[in-house]
Image (cartoon, rainbow, N blue to C red; front, side, top):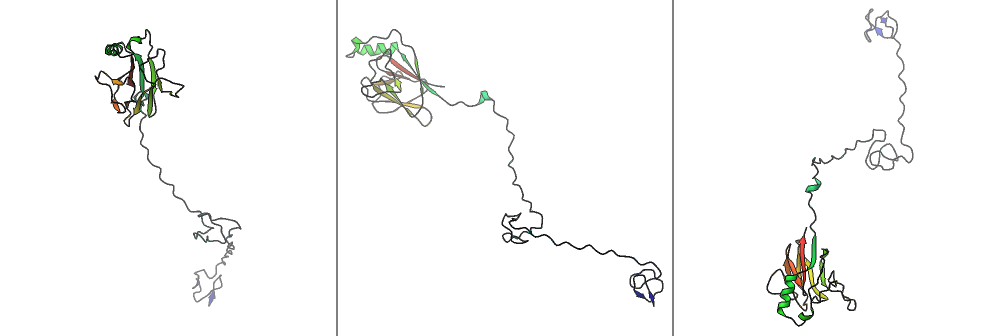
Length: 230
């Protein structure tokens, strides 16, 4: 029996029956495999990379993640797709509607009041000069009248003057804001009443009357209040 360089016994005198090496060849040296290092366990106070729980060993007791493995990949939520909408030009943006009450002296209305020849008509004269006054309307109620400090009356649209219309009651009428953005007028049982546009009869006291853009309110001896929307 022959012996190969690796020490195997072979019946074949040329090549080993076990490893196939040539019987008369040189022996092959095999290097020893390096020792396998033991994996390092997590240190005290270390937390799980998957759920953040405190680790007491290699595997997390909360989620079971292996602390020696790579941290799990967290999928990012998909970002919503925002359509590319061009901006609206500034000159096309809608503007908030605003209302203004313009107070002036109306000669035609004054003449119609004088024609009725009321008890105080003889002592009332049409003002030689009465500049327009503009009152922006804001809020739910706008009171109209003449200020009276002794009675504690301070209307929003104060017609105390000058010139002062003596036919206007201290608390004459009320403008009420409507849900659609418009206004209505209510006469507060004034001494000389309230009229709208050229309607022949004055308003019934304490009954709202809807107003539109451009409507005219007549009170006192010559006062006209025009509502305008812009």
